[in-house]
Amino acid sequence: MTTRQLAERMEISQATVTEMEKREVSQRITLQTLKRAASALNCNLVYALIPKAASLEDTLTQQALLAATSVSGSAIHSMELENQSVSSNETQAQIQEQAEELKQKADRRIWNTPQLRPKRKRK
Image 1 (cartoon, rainbow, N blue to C red):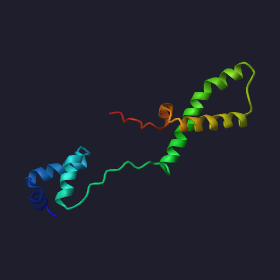
Image 2 (image 1 turned 45 degrees about the horizontal axis):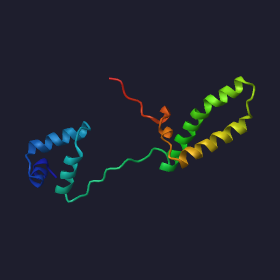
Image 3 (image 1 turned 120 degrees about the vertical axis):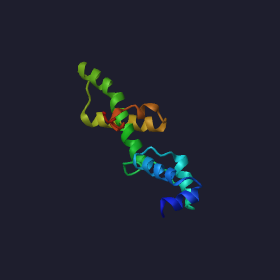
Image 4 (image 1 turned 135 degrees about the vertical axis):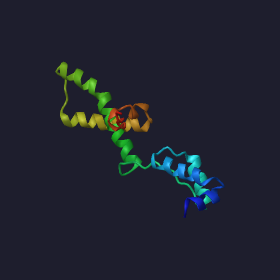
């Protein structure tokens, strides 16, 4: 389909379609514009966020473990300083238990861990 044909379907100018295509390439196009173009093409616009992990559950579990490790870290450190440390297996079990509790309560701290936050590109 040419830009002229799409412009006719969208009832806009050919120059506007060309500008729309440029905005799409530069990732500055709006959802409203995409929806309008989809409608002109007799299509539905599908906008989705797809997790990089195998599933949302995997992402939640990973984040909960990171948060539990962070939450438990200071307590573990204090216990070590007082010669009251527990075995590595016990520590891991406590972290697992804490992670499950954070998930069950939908605790906001799950999403405070910086590991899965996207890094911003410097300009």
